Image (cartoon, rainbow over all chains, first blue to last red):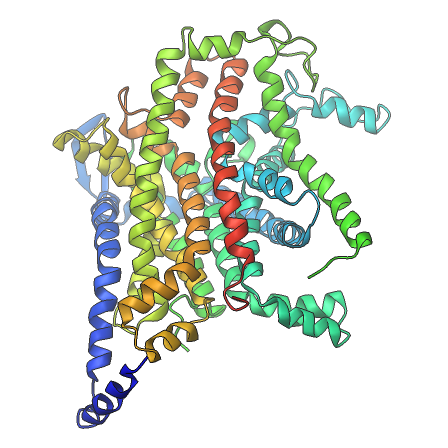
Length: 316
Length: 278
C-alpha cells in the first residue's frame, strides 16, 4: 500500500535508456520463464515427428520394401496433385468442414445462450449438453452408424412412420455419396457442437451483465442487444471456437473411418493419408499427403489470424 | 438478470428438444448394450428385452482381458496428460496474454501448427523411436504424444480466456504494492480459474478421445479404451460385435458423466460469477 513511492525514481532512471526499461526487461525474462517450459516440451514432442514426416515425404519408401527406398524429392507431391482421388478427398473435406462449422456455430451459440439464461433445468441442461463432447468420436460414429444402418437402425422406421409410409424403410444411407456424407456430418455435428457451446458459453459468461442490462433499460431489442452488445464483447471466444472447429473438422477421420471407410467417394484427406500410410505402408506418399494436409490447415489458420484478426497475443 | 415466469417456462420448453437431440443417440447406445444378441438387429429403438450378456462379455467374459485394463489405462494416461498440460499452459497463456516479450507470436503459431498437425503423420516416426528407446506400449509412451494434442490446445484456449480478463485489477494490485508474481497468484489465478477448469475439461476429453496414437503406440500393456473398441470391431469381419461395443461405450461414458458433473459445478459457479461484477 505504501510502496507506490518506489516507482517514480525507477521511471526517471529509465529515461536515460530509451531502449528497454528495467521493468520491460524483467517482463521479458518473466515471459519466457512462464512460457518457456510449455513451449520447449511442445517442441520436443512434435519437432522430431514433424520434420521426419517432411523428410520422409521426399522418398519413395514402402515399409515392406525398405531396401528400395529412394530419394525422389517432390515426385510424391506431383503424383498427389495430378490424382483425381486427391481432389475428391479435398472437396469432401472442404464440404464437411464448411457445412458442419456453419451449422455448429448457429446451433452452438443458440445452445450457449440457452445454457446461459435458462433458470429451470439449468444444471441438468448444462450437464446433458456437454456429454456428447466427452464421448469418444468412435463411439459417436458407431451410435449413428447403427442408427442409420438398415440391419440394426431405427431411423428408417421412424422416417417411414413420419411420412406415412412414403419413406423407403430399406433405404441404404451408406450406399451413395450424399446420404453417407449426411450421416457422417450428423455424427460430427452431434459430437462437436458441445465444444462450440462450451467455448461460447465461457465467452458469454465473461460479458459484464450490467452492459446488457443497460442496453435493455435503454430500450434495445433482443436482436439489438445480441448484435451490438453480446457478440462484439465475445468476439475473441467466437473466433477461437470457429478456428478450432474449422481446423479440427478439416482433419475429420474417425467418423468417416467407422462409417464408410471412404466408400462411395466419401474419402477425406485424413483417411486418404491413413490408407497410404497404414494400409498400403507407403510411408513416403502418406507423409507427403500429411504435409499437404498440414499446409492446408496452416493456410486456413493464417487466413483466420491475418484476415479475421484473431489475435491471441492480445497486442493492442 | 431476472427472468419473468413466462421467459422461464419458454426457455425450459426450448431446452427439451436440445436435450432430446443429445440424449437420443446416447439412449440408443444403451438400448443396443442391453439388447440380447438375438434381437440386436430388430430395428427397434427401445429394447423389448433386457439382458446383461453384453456387459458380462466385456467385464468378466472373453473380452474382459481387453476391456478392463484398457479402462484403467485410459483414465491414468488422460489424467496425467491433462494435469501436465493445464499447469504448463496456465503459465504460458498468462505470459502470452499479459506480458510483453519477444517470441510470443511464435509460441502461438507453433502451438497451432503442433495442435493441428495430422496425428497420423506424427505416429509413424514415433512408432519407430518408441520401439528403439523402449517407450512403446508404456504409459509415458502415450502421455508424451498426448501432450502434442493437449498442450497446444490448452495454451490456445487459455490464451483466449485470459484475453478477456480485466487486467486493470492486476495493475491495481501492483499499484497497491504487489509484485508481478503476487499479482499473478493473488489476483489473476482466482480470476482465471473458470477458464482453467473449462480448459481442463476440454483437454481431458481430447486425450480421452484419441485413438490413433493409442492404437499405433500400444499393443497390450498400455492400450486405452478407444483402441480396445477398435479391436472389438476388428474381431470379426462379417459379424459386427454391436452389443459388445455398445456395452463398452456405456461403461466408458459413466465415469465421464461423473467427471462432467464434478467439474460442471465449478465451471458454472466460476463462469457465472464474473470477475468485473466481483
